[in-house]
Amino acid sequence: MTSVLTNLFDGVAYGMLLFVLACGLAVTLGLMNFVNLAHGAFAMAGGYVCAVLVNQYGWPFFAGLPLAFIAPAVIGAVLERLLYRHLYTRSHLDQVLFSVGLVFMSVAAIDYIMGSSRIFINLPAALQGQFDVFGVGIGRYRLMLIVICGLLTAALQLVLARTRFGSRLRAAVDDPRAASGLGINVPQVFALTFAFGCGLAGLGGALSAEILGLDPYFPLKFMIYFLIVVTVGGSSSIIGPFLASLLLGIADVAGKYYVPKMGPFVIYTVMIVILIWRPHGLFGRAAR
Amino acid sequence: MNAPSDVRFHAGRHARWHAAEIVFWLAALSCAFVFPSRYLIMTDILRLALFALSLDLILGYAGIVSLGHAAFFGVGAYSAGLLALHGIINEPVIALIVAGLAAAVLGFCTSFLLIRGADLTRLMVTLGIALLLEALAERFSDITGGTDGLQGIEMQPILGLFAFDMFGKTGFFYALIVLFLLFLLARRIVHSPFGLSLRAIRNNPLRAAAIGVPVNRRLIAIYTVAAFYAGVAGALFTQTTALASLDVFAFERSADLMLVLVIGGTGYLYGGLIGAVLFRMLQEIFSTITPQYWQFWIGLVLIVVVLVGRARLHRWVLFVPNLLITRIAGGKAAVAVPESEGP
Image (cartoon, rainbow over all chains, first blue to last red; front, side):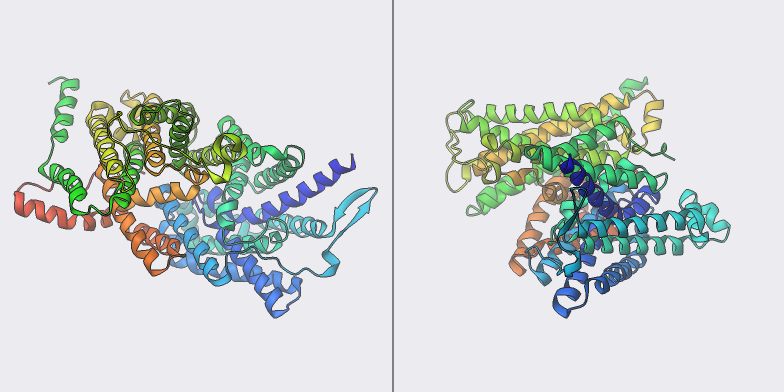
């Protein structure tokens, strides 16, 4: 019984991590309808920035995290202004080709700079090990993940639903022409959102180094997970991707624990079945 | 003139063989005699060309964006490998067809998943199927050999007459003949009224449905055919290299394939063939510059191709051949840029 709860806890932590990693993609892919397969590259960038700062320059872990957010956000903003914005109106094929090209470049570049082996980020002692609550093993690091990711999720939902920027974004996504007619600077809103999504991915990448592992192939290995979160979650709100991430995290942890021989088989099958059953995602709305 | 014969007339007019096409195939054949020491790399190009031809059928003609075309390649490769390894079918040509059919069956079954949902769902489903097969191949390592791959495949002579030699000469001619025959078939398919209806679907599925094209059935049919082609390409891979390993399913293979097709151009069948040659040459150049990091440059090429615009690039690539054709043959450009891409 306690192992079930521990697994559930791990699954929730994993799921929340996936949500932070993928929620930027939920906006670009789900809302702006841009197939950005290179989302994982930004996550990897964040992870490596944090790793270099913490391991080589001796920064404390929690000081590295904000930079893991800022660096990919800046990279994202620059790339958005230079490259991505030209592709918003192109066909999906062009977007796929472009972002795959970006993935290949980032993989080779990180391999060249940092080497191809998996790296770890030195964690402070306070985050290591686990403690028991009524016999349920709670990993300290995973507890921190749940706290950080939970706060982020709540903040995101508030920003999207309550602030002026959130309503501008929703307007820009729903109908860019009408929105710009109302005086909303649509390209600026998109650029900010894109950069913010990249930043969140970077933060997720730094947080995930301990759990998912960080190596140059990160963008390729986890691409499918991010895509699952977005397509299964649908694009009506961030609640959909959030629930999808939790589901995916719990299913993946449980699958690896209870039927380790099946490997990633369970996840892919579930994804295909869900997409057949509801092509617009579990919590999605019909295509516009 | 009534409608069916009208369609046939126009289809027939486009289907005539151009001088440039004959020159192209003669050039391909002459490579065998011009570069006798390069059979292995040329066979590799032919396999890739066949694989790209397969993707062109669904992407260039029917507008299905697939991220997991390697699934069919892999099924063909493992089928051919297993057939040869266990001596079930020793004759390579029959094994090739059986492997292609195995991939076609998978294509037929998965095509039903494709006709639901739009581009994004298709991307996900095709990608998911390829990953699923990779996971399966890894899981059932007692059959597939796991990460080591199938080992100890010995190929019997083709038709019982032509043994595979270590220089790859037999393999090259074998691959060339298979490619040519399948190309003829593909050419016949795309110039038929069926092929025209596919283009109608690519350009606008709703309108195609409105003029009475059975969209879903056509998509299922072409997807199955393309899966057959990819399966044959995979089987050729196994038969000419005597190898089949997990990387036949790899995502990189599907992604590289898209690049191949995009370099050559989609929607006129020769794109895959020209693209395969250019891609291998690029790869060769990049890996001599940086053996380990050639992927970086491949990625850069992809980005540049997209930003320059595929149609424009296509005109540049075809500029010299077309110039030669118009100057020498005096006719109109034979391999003209196909009509602009659908959405």
